[in-house]
Image 1 (cartoon, rainbow, N blue to C red):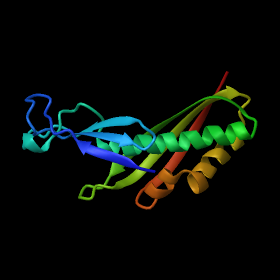
Image 2: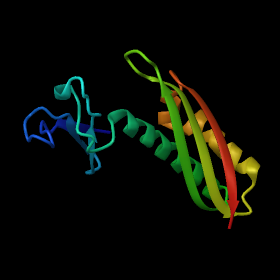
Image 3: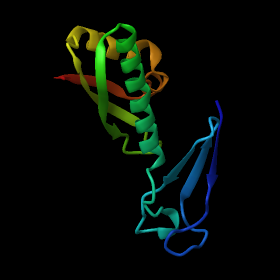
Length: 152
C-alpha cells in the first residue's frame, strides 16, 4: 500500500505559502484533502479549516475499516443486513504526541430479523481479528463499542 502526501503550501485567505493544507494521493488512485485548524495565536502555523484534520481522517478510516468488516461478516453469515453506520467519539492525550486514549464506536445496523448475537459477534471479530486500524489504535486507546438494531 502506498500514499503520497504533499503540502499544497497555499493559504486560502492570502494565497501565500503559509497555509497548512495537504493533498494525499493514494495508491488506488484517489485523493484526499486535509487541513489544520486555524491558530489565532500563530496564524502562520494554522490551517484554514478547508478539510478534515489528519487525525479526523484516522478516526474516519477506522470507522470505515470496522464497518466494512461488520457488514461483510454479517453478509457472509447470510444475515439480511441493509444498512450500517458507526459513530465514533474519541479522546486524545493532552500532551504531544496527542494519541487517541479512548474511542467509542456506536453501530446502528438496519436489516430484517438481525440477531443481536450475530451483530455482537461480527463487531467482536472485526475488533479482535480483522480491522487493522482498530487493532493498531487499540495499542494506545481504550476502545469500547455499542450497537442498536433497526428493523426494516
